[in-house]
Image 1: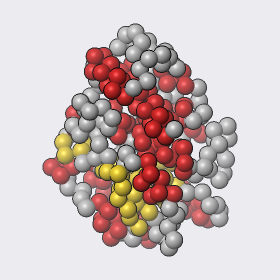
Image 2: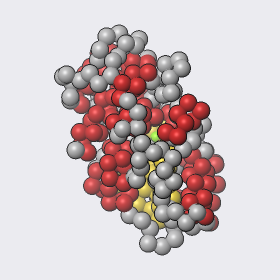
Image 3: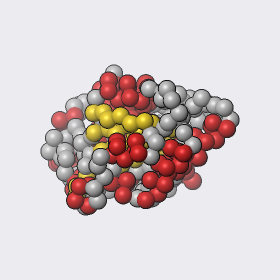
Length: 283
Ligand SMILES: [Mg+2]
C-alpha cells in the first residue's frame, strides 16, 4: 500500500512539473517515500477539518519540492485530484512554492525562502505545549538548506526549550542546486551537529518505509527534540536522474518523462487529472 502511494506521488510529480514546464523534480521525487509514511502512518489529521486543533503539524521548509506534497494532499483527500493539473498555473492555489495566502488552512505556513521553517515549527511546538496539546510538529528540510544560519538558531532554540514535540526531518541527499553539499558548504556530520544542539538524533534510509516508520513514530522518552536524518537520493525512483544535482530544478522533456513514468509504472490507464500544458497531450 505504501509503495503504491509513493509511486503515485512520483507519477503525479513528474506529470505536474512537465505539464507546468517548470518545477523541482529531484527533491520532490526524493521525499515521496517520507511523505507517504507520514500521511499513511504517522500524522494525525482530518482532511474535512483542516483546523482541527489536535492535528499534527507539518512544515515543508524547503517549499520548492511542493509538487510531491500537493500530490499527497490530494491523494489523501484534502482537495480534488484533478486540481493537480493547475500546478504553477496563473491563479492556481498550487503555486511553485506553498503560499498560505492561496492555500489557506491546507498548510500551516507559506514556505520557499530557505532556512525559515524550523523557526516556524518551534513556534507551533511551543504554542502546543502551552495549550497542553499532544500533537507533534514535523519540519522537513533539505540538506543544502542547512547552510542558512537561521536553521542553527532554530536548532539552538528547540534544544534550549527541550521541544520534545518537534521533529526535524533532514533530506540528506548530499546535493543542492550548484553541486554537492560537500563542495558548496559542508554539512556533515548532520546528526552530530544536531546532537550538539541538544537534539536526539537518528539516521535512516529515507526510502525504507520500515525504518522511516520506526524513526518517525518514536516519541522521545526524554525532553529533547528529535532529528531524523534521512539518507535519500535526489530524483529517487528514476534511475537515469538519480544523484545528479542538475535535477534539482531541471524540467524533463516529454521523452524523458515518458521513460521515467514507464520505470515507475502505472503508466497505463492513468487519467486522474488532465494534462493540457506546455508539454502537450496526455502523459
Ligand atoms: Mg539536498
